[in-house]
Length: 188
Image (tube, rainbow, N blue to C red; front, side, top):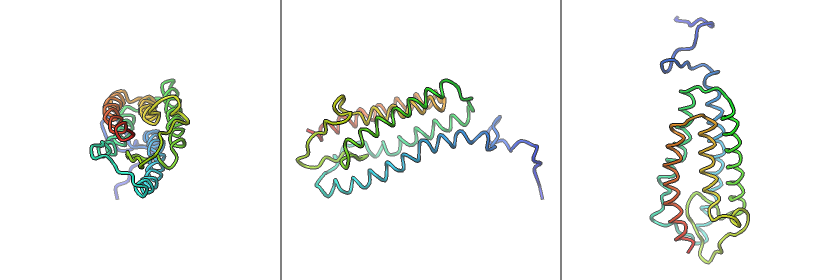
């Protein structure tokens, strides 16, 4: 039986990295921070989507949702992997990232609460529905999307992932521009 002594480092996964709990725990915490709320949001969205379709809402054929549903979680995964590879120490950037991420989540959830059962991941507008102008929608047209970009920026700072963070923001901002065009047309 081949045993590893307890005082020896864990086997290397990548040159210079070990797979010990101490090295992976911060990245796992970031994964939980990103993906646990995302799962709850997906469940809430699915429930609302069923209701909206029952009310006669139809999804525009040219929506970019298919791309968004893959790219959004992939952006977070890439930043978490970059964090794990880089193994940065927590510092003021980490604190700033946590604050940006928290503020972005608050804005996003304010938008979700304001839309209520009309909020979903998909563009689904029931016939004869009024435009929501309460909550953050009093101040801006697409607060949910600003919140999403804030989540990405906050995670990039929190994870200290400059490469994947910048790439995630650029790619997802381009997708959101296309999404906003689709949504504006559906809202009339």
